[in-house]
Image (cartoon, rainbow, N blue to C red; front, side):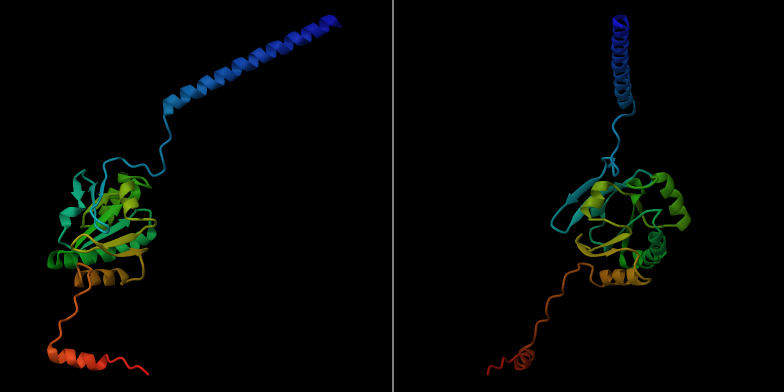
Length: 224
């Protein structure tokens, strides 16, 4: 019986040693794997080439690249009414809105100086440039298409797409539309932008002395 007990103890010790060796091997394998694949990227990873500048409370500037790698700076269009359309190829409402936006650009770009910038968000969430270029050709988009970067989306408060931002000629945000909206709603927004490119309320008309007297008559405060 004593010999049998010693054998059982020896077997347990060998099993413990084997388990320790196996655990060490697994740990070393996991470390090696971590060094091989590197850290997991964030869901919305920025490439680092975006430049976002808030010149004042409501005036923004950014630098984004187009499909050919050329940089476009938003402030280059200062003095023009600007429409920025944040969209993606996988967004069905975006497909509905883009044809209307194309018509507006064709109608008002040369005659009224309207600038339209399409910011493709597939570079933030989607298949990237490889899906954007065929889409642009399919829809025959004639206005500039830029590649989105996370800092720009954050700065403009883009939480859903399509999101359309209307900028006055001085660079201030004068309107915003989330979603594609009903047919004609985008046209109404552009017409309002063109009618008042600065988005500022017009100063009150200066009255003549006769008009002031008449105005005072209608503004008498009656007290009981």
